[in-house]
Image (cartoon, rainbow, N blue to C red; front, side, top):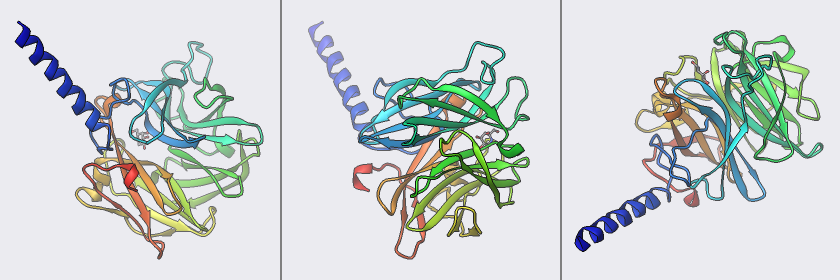
Length: 322
Ligand code: DGJ
C-alpha cells in the first residue's frame, strides 16, 4: 500500500513538473493553460503593457457563442493569470451586447487624458449573423474592468468587421477596420477621448483583406492582414507606408517555415512591440467546431536594418530570448 502511495505521489510530481516545464516557453498552436491549469480563452485578441504587466484581452468563446471579453495578466508573456471577464454580455434584450450577440477581435488602449481604458470590438447584433457589421466601444477606469458598454455604430456609416486599434507616437489613436463586405480596409482617426471615430476616415486599400495587425518601426508603418476565407487559414500579406493614411505598398508575405503559406494554419490578430525592432506576431488557429479550443500562434517578429520584416516558425520559444 505504502509503495502504491509513493508511486502515485511520484506520478503527481512528474505531472506537475511537466506542466511547469511547459509554462517556461510559448508553444505555438498547442493548448495553452493559464495559471489555474485551464486553457486560455482569449481569441482574436490583443495585448497591452501597463506598469510592467502585460494584459491579454480576447474573445471568450463557447463552442461557437460569444461569452464576452476575457482578460489575463502576465509578467513574462508565458504564464497567464485569468483576471476574469473584462466585458460581459448583458441580460437586457435591448442592449446591443445582449446574450446572443457576437463580440470579436477586442482591443484595448489607454487614454492618458481621460485616464480611462478604452475597448473597441467588432460587434454583430443578436440573430443577424454577420450582417450588422458594427464597432462597439466600452470604457473602464481599471484595466481589468468591468468595462461599461457605451454604444455601437458603423464608423462614418461604413460597415465595420475585423478591426484593430493603434496609438501612434504623438498619442493619436486609430481604428483600422474591414469595410464594404470586407473588400475595403479603412482607417479612422479617433476623437481625443478615443470613444468615437472622427471624419478623418479613409481607404487604405481595396484588396479583400481582414484580420489587420499594425505596428511601427521608426517612421515606418507595417500592416499584416489575411485574405477573407471564414475560419479557414490563408496566406498573410504585409503592407508598409510612411503615413498611416497611406499610400500602403504591398511588401510580400513575411512568414517563413512549414505552413507559412497558410499563416501556419492561423490568422493574424495583433503584433505586440517588445523593443524598437522586436515584436511578437500573434495569430489564432481557429477551431470552428469548438471555438473556445482554438489555439494561439505566437512567434517572434523581427525587423532588420533594411526594414525587412520576418517571422520564422518555432516549435517552442521563450520571450526572454528575444
Ligand atoms: C474571419 C474573421 O477574421 C474572424 O474574426 C471571424 O469573423 C470569422 N471570419 C468568421 O467566419
